[in-house]
Image (cartoon, rainbow, N blue to C red):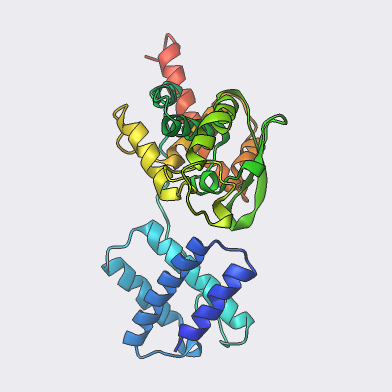
Length: 302
């Protein structure tokens, strides 16, 4: 059975590769599904898996209605798993060697206009501790380009207000510096000086890992990623955007930085992208913006 070796691989991802628990859990689900499919083919030994079995699994995913993005993720997981199996001597050959990843149609990320961002942020006028927290969270997500998980994991020791930056722990435990200034810095200073203390007083029993959290829930514990999604969705609904996500604010941050003249490499560093190609998607958005500005402004373009 593949089960024990799958667990060994997941331990390798967690311990040696520094994958987050959520990522390792997602990989585990994908590999469990893969193992269950192989059982239907009568395969229970990793060395018996061949290219035909992988291709059959791809076809099965298609029949089950998986989107190209989901299929690409699953096949990527299998490629890593089989590379590890060959490296560790559990398999004589890599069954995924000749398997290509599905092509995904290019889809530009959703972004808000500068005016829409202003409406989302300025619409937060609740003076209560939770209201100040929500406004600060939105300002930091947009002002610093953070992921929801990064905002959730932010600790007070990571805030260097006088120096003007945040220490952010991103994917795979990688640390980076994010500039902190303007409205985000002002609201964060206000929140940490007033509202956070009021929320922390409500904590009865905290895990040590949650004691220094920046963003707290109504019970004084660390604000979860799911709660951050809910806060952002609620702020979007208030301006008629029912599809607003934390990543939309992150995309908007990057797009507005590029439109304002920031270098792509700087944006890559702030966002924590390991590959510049990930950041280059925003150049396509910027070209769209330029075309819209041209059509609006040039007297002979209309």
